[in-house]
Image (tube, rainbow, N blue to C red):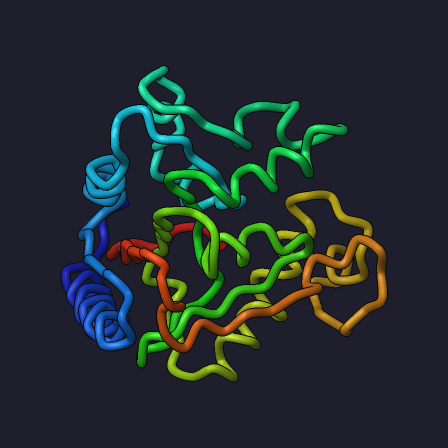
Length: 217
């Protein structure tokens, strides 16, 4: 279904404003008008033969980029399409290995209009890859991840992304049943660690590709 020109204009305006704010916070940032353009940009940033680590991301899946990354030109580590990397005894060792990859790919839960990245994890490997370790980190986000304030970012995670991701992953948590966060103490709780990147951390190389479409949760 096509997007109304007024809505597309609004998406582009919000995204470009956020891209400029990210740049002021020392992140590399680029606007892509749609998922196909974002896919091309991401691939252009990954050298042939690079080792690649992954943080779980429906946004990356929506780009269709996994088909390119499993072509044999790259060296995926904890590949989302590899069952052995997603479950069983190799899951954690591969996630640790991914922390020293040439390139780390992930999405982000929320981005504030003033250029802060806000993310919550159950394991911590995704947010760890944004802070330290990989030679280069590439984060892809749709305009639906843009919020005005840090409070809105945290609300987006607890009231929107958290319950839906818990449901999607079949976690046995209250929010996966009720759709509402009650700050539970469940073992399967998806929101165990939250990190706010006010600026790019020292010595890291982080590029944010902000897409003028709604992608991911």
